[in-house]
Image (cartoon, rainbow, N blue to C red; front, side, top):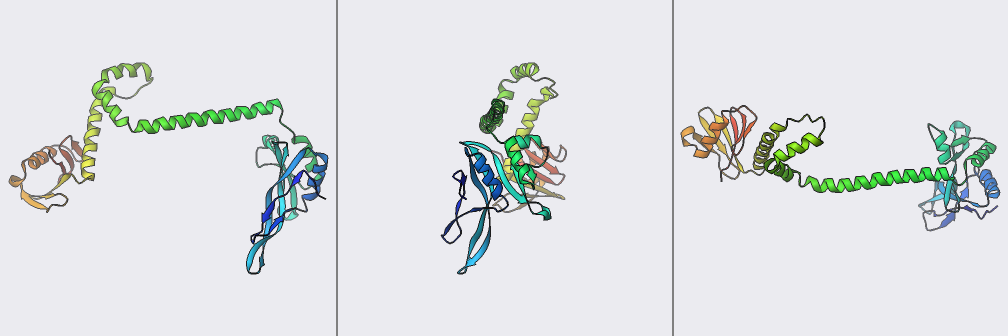
Length: 285
């Protein structure tokens, strides 16, 4: 029997031939009874099961069966009715919507092998939302919207601000540090930062970045101490071997300063001591 309020899909089976689904035999009696009982509802096919066949050497879909229906009252979705396999016992009816989900801590849907119980579940849980439920939906949508918009606006600002952070740090420390100290005392509760040391730490950071950038761009001299000799390497230049007295003045002065600090230390504008034999020296402008 055909029901005007049961909407089945028409699917291309894979060779250009379009076929309409049939309702899964287990699900069919339930859908027919509900379609008659609730003529104002529409039952739209949501999921289609099928098998494959070979026709003239081409794989095509066959036995297309509607196994899940979305139920609507006009444009409002009331829930889903579907069937799934129940272990070795065959199929079972599944009735699911937001009211059912609110009642269950695990899984989804009311599931039963009995048609009458499935009908009762639909009778009990399906229907248009009341005002409280609509307000609950509105609250959830509002929460999601506010969160999404706030995150989007925050992300856009943060992405742009990150491009200004380094310049902002220098501007604050170099131009308005005392003013910022007063602001921090009033607006940063439980502050554990040693504010007095921050200007020094910023300068050390800048010095470290300077050496790092110079090394990455091959704009440095690598000096290796081999006994009494100094091997000087610079990209695209031949390696030079010199004794201390033959070193260029800025390299001798830079290495001399770096020898006075500990390993893994940087001197601003000079370079980095890697260890007792290896030094990165910045080129001098």
